[in-house]
Length: 406
Ligand code: NAD
Ligand code: USQ
Image (cartoon, rainbow, N blue to C red):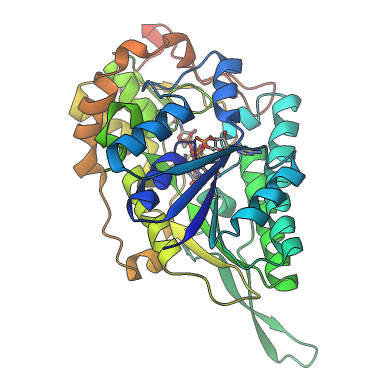
């Protein structure tokens, strides 16, 4: 059994991961500065599900499972000394790093949020690596990265797992083979911080021989996992607001609210998706199958299916009867793109994913409809724009709304 430090363990992906690893018998310590809860207050937003305080969550888990989870409130971007002290005393076998500002729209809101996202995310990742190296520890570090680092250029190639094999002609025309980080092409300040994280990992893996796995995750949907379902006090968060809500969860909530599904532009954007239960399974697989090769970061694509936003809206509309609205796209992104992604590593480790077809109805009934009364409709529009001259993603009066033919 391992001593596992989960940074960002109060968040949407971190909390169910903490419960799952605890249920498997690992000793889990959550490190979190609770900034996600503070941002909810700043925005006037809330989780659709009524999440408990971290103290109540942990006490409820003890009642349900008999197992302890420890909690340390540390801002790992700002309080290096506290982070280093926690690591020195815990000497974790595994560190899972979820602790970053993760919303692209929030990161584009204004210069304040841009600077915060860069300072927080780069500071957090660098402090973590610097502390591990400085203390001479040898934990397996697992970081949650994003599919968005690859960009959505639609060049027709299958996106490999992190590295691109290239052949470079030498002076005498001999071809030299290199595996380089896949050229990064971030679409927001948030995604840019994940691209910068990659360089930090590359350096510390080479220089200090740190063992690092970077999981390039797609958009996570769903809410509950086997463990969060065990007691209402363990419920996971469900973000639906215009900054933090991700597209499929937003559509499910909008359907439950009889609000048209807000498709940005034509909805031709193809993205990669994964259910939260599979996120948790992938984390357990990554913990159990350690990165042993030092010198080079292991990168695994953590996604299970791809869909266009348009197709997602149509599936949700079919299941729920919701209307679809094409709204202005507040982002700068390709209007239409294809996407093919390799996820061989997790498949080889035995991941058998939950598909959209399996999980959608349960999610609609268990969460979106059950908690629709908690939704604040004012938080639905996507008001953060990528540049000042763009329009927010707001549904205009009925005349401007049209359905996409199925
Ligand atoms: P979240 O915002 O719900 O959770 C992040 C947690 O980290 C929060 O509890 C927050 O308080 C904490 N945190 C942030 N900065 C911190 C700091 N400086 N010190 C200590 N704690 C800090 O986000 P999430 O959806 O759970 O995402 C977790 C990770 O997974 C992120 O790194 C994100 O980029 C990545 N990811 C998420 C998704 C998704 O769809 N949710 C998809 C791909 C990748
Ligand atoms: N979109 C809509 N309507 C909406 C909301 C979003 O059409 O109401 C569109 C967006 O324009 C975008 C797509 O849906 O084309 C995905 O948006 P999203 O908000 O679901 O996802 P994104 O901003 O990419 O970010 C999320 C997580 C982030 C993670 C990323 C994985 O918030 O932490 O890194 O998914 S990925 O997209 O693979 O990079």
